[in-house]
Image 1 (cartoon, protein in one colour):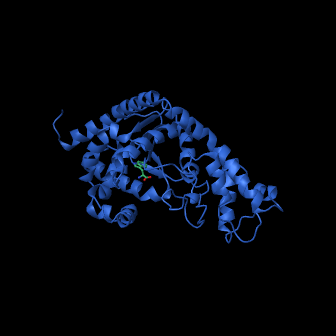
Image 2 (cartoon, protein in one colour):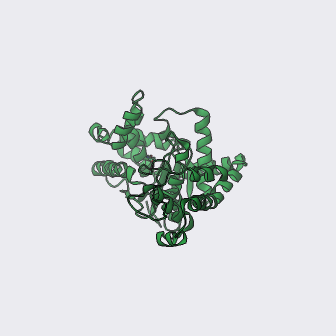
Image 3 (cartoon, helix red, strand yellow):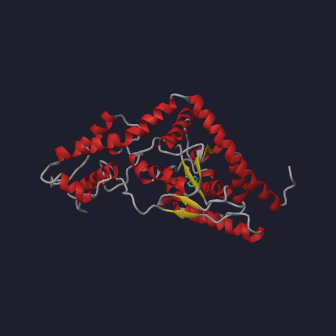
Length: 332
Ligand code: TRP
């Protein structure tokens, strides 16, 4: 395939609400790839069902996530923004790639080991072959780069290995993708247990901020955030609570750590915590309000996701047809 620009592919699971951590660490940076790459963004609902989902919630989360991606700055006209299950080529190529993925390789995946420990009552084959479907997502679009978090590096490496194995037998069918892992951007930690990553699966809802949280909820959660006994606003490894709040304040305002420390010199947490809350409210406001506006017009969202699926299907079909032909399947 002759490409003018390199291709970037991003996938995100509609498994629940997006946290401040997801936004700062991943989503916020995604739109910028549109300047330099042909971008494909996919809501991976087929991956989500590897653990049990409530149908009504899954439907809501998938649509809301679709809207949130637009609200974050992804342009559905310029890029391809679609829902995985709307493009059957993903499941079709995943089957083929299953036959080029080794049992041993899948057994070594850290995410499989973790998830099968967490969902011991439902260690299904889909959970095991999850990486073959992810490889299909990536390889269908002749992807050059995959912006992901460190936890997904292993899956992208496996995708490369699968692609190389296939190419080794059938010639250059797939572009070899590379993981791009952001080095900058603070890791947002839990507001209650600042030694852990902020996660929406935490039991205490005061430990995470959701992009869709109301301003009141955000203010309340920051006021209850765990800080440290020494009441100065200073970043330090032995002060994980306040260090996390400083990082969040920096992410929300664009200030440096030094500037924040100077601004709150001689002031206590009583002043700092509400200031962080207010900064985060303003930081998230545009995304939340735009998502709400989009969610109020379901017809327009449906038009956009149908158009996205059509664009995706056209690109995916080219790769899948080539793969089927190479394998020796009779033409349809
Ligand atoms: N496995 C990814 C995650 O859990 C989601 C994902 C599915 C993905 N397919 C992808 C990410 C393709 C990048 C490319 O975060």
